[in-house]
Image (cartoon, rainbow, N blue to C red; front, side, top):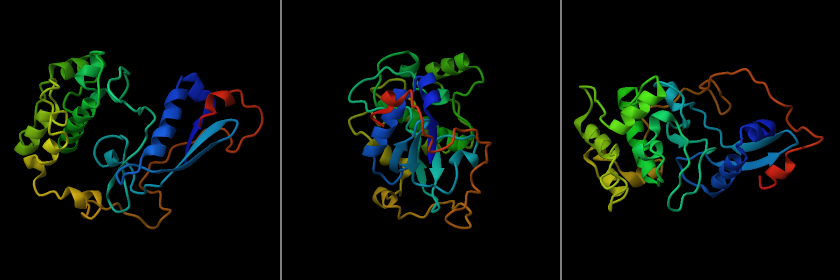
Length: 248
């Protein structure tokens, strides 16, 4: 259960993002995306009821937490669509994890779905190397590195993987894999993915390389524990923000 305080949502000006997240989750039905079972609200909070993904966060096993979870069977699930939006053509919103921002976002240009293929290149690099390609502690230096677009690869980096990452991390949209005439097939047919049966993968028929240790269906041991500070669930009484969440 994902619980968000109405006061905080309004204060942080995230009402539109929260409503978008609900509507987008209602549209999604894919084996590698976290499913939403329902939503409700009370006078203090809004609630998302999501399928429970027991394996914990993928980057707990690598470097840091991102929005990738692991199922009990070891398959990946993407979650947290708070900043998601439906883009039919072009958008100008500046948001996202700094390490994963494409050059056209940083340059405040209108951008489309090609930014997701750039982010895939960043993710592949980070999963292989253990750190993102343009990392810098200072955000301005990070953005300079992204705009320069000259990733350095460790010596042991697989050459086929290196070739794919370079093709995904292209500042030139007319050359970026995923954004070309062949679309996603250019990526699926790349030599680094040779031997992958994509239909079996989508059907969850390929055994995962890592199975998280679990003692039962209610096991939460793969998640870190955090102190909770929240309004009582099921709160009743005056709701000053009710009109802002009438579409929730």
